[in-house]
Image 1 (spheres, rainbow, N blue to C red):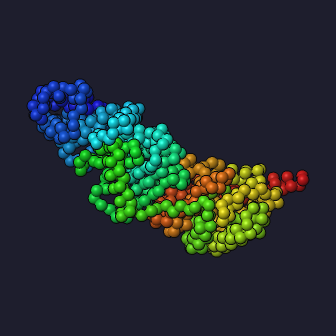
Image 2: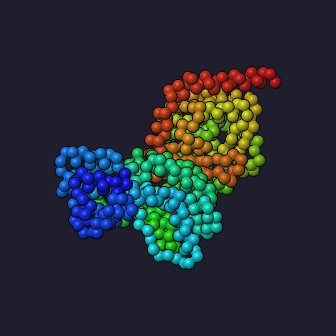
Image 3: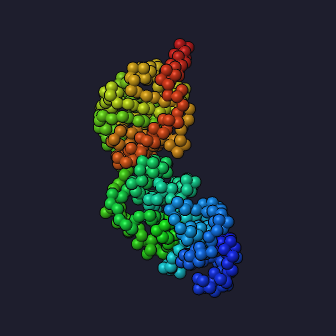
Amino acid sequence: MTFGRCLKTLLSISNIRMSQLAKAINVDSSLVNRWVHEKRIPAVPYLKNIAQYLTIYINNPLQMKIVDELIIQLGVDISSYDNNEDIIYKILFRALSYSNSNKHLPGSALADIKTSINKRDETGPDYSYKLIYGNEAIYNTLMSLLELTTEKKNCKNKQIYLTYQNYPNDCFFSYGMLKRLKEKILESIQNGWYITFLIRLDCGVGGVIKFIDFILPLIKTGKVKLFYFNLYESFTIRKELYIVSNLGALSCFPYDSNLDIECAFFLQNSSSIEVLTNYVNLLITNNSSDIIQYYDPHNSRVYYQMLSKINERSGNYYSYNNSFSRLLIPESLYIKFLNQTDLSVEDKELSLQYHKAQYRSFLKNLSKCIFKDIYFLSILDQLCEKKVLYLYTCCGTEKIFMENQDIIDYLEHVVYIIKHYDNYRIAVVQNEIDSFINNITFYIKERNIVFLEVSNFTHRESDVHLSINNPVIVKAFITYYDSLWQKISPLNKDKQDIIEIVEDYIRAIKYDLSLE
């Protein structure tokens, strides 16, 4: 509902004329007339006076029933309000936000921003700002800014800074808004922009899981930096900052202590953008810690050394695999596969050393810790039909073409592990459980670390290897993994059924081998 319709309804049920309201709040009656007929919208400070005056005349059950209908129509949360004046104020504010958001639809917002940028480039900086009301208007302006990142090809400093402090509690953008925002940020990344997030981790595991859903497709690009507040200052509470270098910045905040984020200063001059950028960098330097550890794709030794070291520690282990786990390859086969690669003697020895260490730790920990593995049936198809295995080495992944007997030996070893180790739990599913984590392999070592890999099997230099050891996020990843595990049907986790599936593949290969 627009502000004009809302105010007209409230005046009608109160039996108040527009001229009476104008006199009560000390404005010209023609101004109230323009508000009601949607030719103008009021500034926010007028709302308190309007609400205070209307509340005097809204006091019977029939009037309150219509107020309740407005509350439902506008989606107003009144749980924190204990008097009618605050409720009327919130109704008016929500309607005002809706009217403002209608004035900032994505197309028109983008056109306005483009016009401002062109004017700035032609005539010099404009030190004015716009005050935007309503989270939809803020969202549309942000989306329009990000849209420009796909058009501006020659920006020298392609940096986007985003805080992420209020989403986990669902008090700002909706789930659908966040989904579209994620897609737009991915487009910006594909156009060469780099993203820096500054987040809070005091929202509990549930909030962090929502953040994992949002951030995972972004961090797998390797172009995202992620920091969390380890010190808190009052300025950051219930505020958000969005900065797109050279294009614009939004500083978002609540209008008063009873409201969610509903307002933003929108700045487009270079000096203002630079001031806010310097402020965010100051927060990052003095009040935050880095969450993500990226590993150089040209030097995978550090990554695999860390994997080996962590696997030696005790703790439950969870994996979500884009290919069969390196832990299921017996040493003799690993050596044979290594000899098919073009690696140097030194790299082969180092790869074997890492593999032995991880394999020994795997078998040792199986006696006292739980191992859970999620695989896709397509991995078995690739292995048995295309006879392809991607071998993990200290230099990255190597494509190996397997002989039939090698595949048989490998799968028989997998069956042996499933049968003989009660603590080894395996699930084989048809497709990705959640689409946003396709093409990703991740490992979680309980209470220690999360490893995440995105492998491009045709271009090794584009592989992304990273780790996260923040305990809050590690715990959230475990909870998230458990939710994935619960989505899998019992049949796909039944050991005997999985053994039968693998043995069917073995029989098919043996039959092919007998025909050779």
